[in-house]
Length: 142
Image (cartoon, rainbow, N blue to C red; front, top):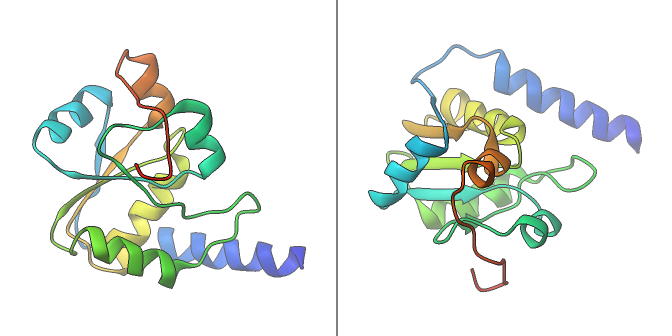
């Protein structure tokens, strides 16, 4: 079982990092993210529910977990949910705790799936909070 998970994660990372780029992923700091939020961009928080409960979430963001605690994911199901929020040509910002998971997902969306306006919050929600920006408590209705 562990070997299958490791294989699955390896394939994901190979696909995310080994394909030529079609568009550029824009890396954002907390200040740049604030500017995009003011422009009504789609912000997708890819962390897990336990993380949302611990730190809170950015008001107006969409909580859509990609990786579970074991590193597993269901990309088709996740993409179906993302498709309800935004199209491939919409401006989408991905955020996680420290920017690592959201960076991997950004590369998948940009390089493999043809999303044209992907933005990654380089240092994640922890930098957002450290920079003095507000979060709201997570509830299932966020």
